[in-house]
Amino acid sequence: ILNKRNGGELDSFLIEITANILRFRDEDGKPLLDKILDVAGQKGTGKWSAIAAMDENDPLTLITEAVYARLLSALHGERQRASGLYPEKVEVNEKLFIEE
Image 1 (cartoon, rainbow, N blue to C red):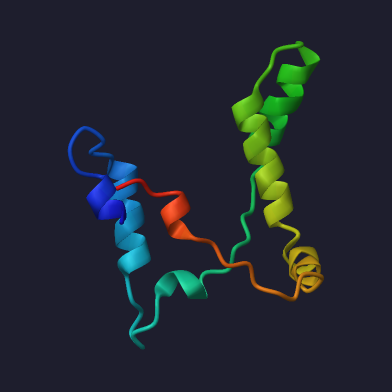
Image 2: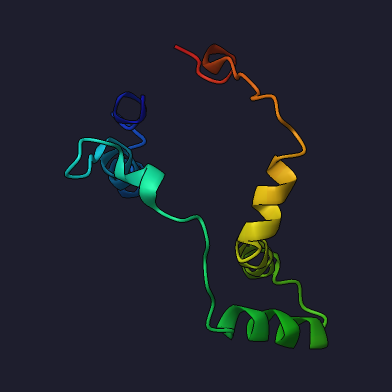
């Protein structure tokens, strides 16, 4: 789907490498993406930038939201426990999101 969408005017490098990552298989033939732990760390520069921007009353929404996402990512155990509260898997109809 990503390769098809990336043709023509879009021609995005990020879409191209995302498609390559999703397609890549490990030595055992299983998708490598399924083996990567979904936890991001941070050095603190984004947090520092967000705090400095707030001190100056300047909106820095993109970086601040990225910091929030990393903070949530670091809560892997909590996210795993919360996912157990919803035992049924939600089925998504891809055709609702993809226009041919």
